[in-house]
Length: 203
Image 1 (cartoon, helix red, strand yellow):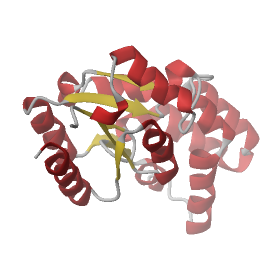
Image 2 (tube, rainbow, N blue to C red):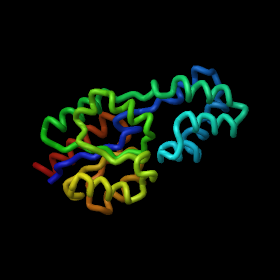
Image 3 (cartoon, one colour):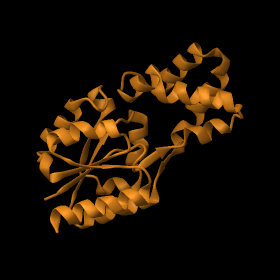
Image 4 (cartoon, helix red, strand yellow):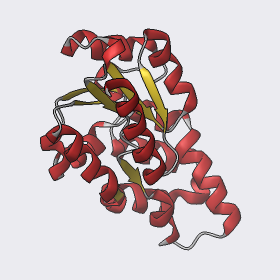
């Protein structure tokens, strides 16, 4: 029986519209693609998520490493970035509904401290029972220690958990522990799949 739902944050409950932000500074398509790689796939971004540097430190480091984009990166990351974290309204309602139905709601997320603080200010957070976050643990999924820490910290039985993430490789450690999983693609499809899994497990 599923008693707890574990969600990823970025790409599932919330999204960081950083490409929308960068468009403010009117880069050309080639620059947009380059900036996407710099932000999403770079070591600096990963270290920021692990809590090994602050947002300002990441901005300074990226600006120094990529002088061609120095002005754009500095302004985007230091002046505007945190305002581009958006909670999906459908997922907000889903989390509230699941909580009211009696499920425990937990987070297992690669998320930097600054984004977590913004996330905590949203009304959705009153439905969250706890979580494990990369910036606190200094590791990122799919490191199994994050999954183990979540279960140990909140005394969760893996076989009673459903884990929702938008990255297939991040589901593997959860499955290995005995959790059921949902691969998130689009909100409505994921919401239907969560409902199906719960009905199948608890019906």
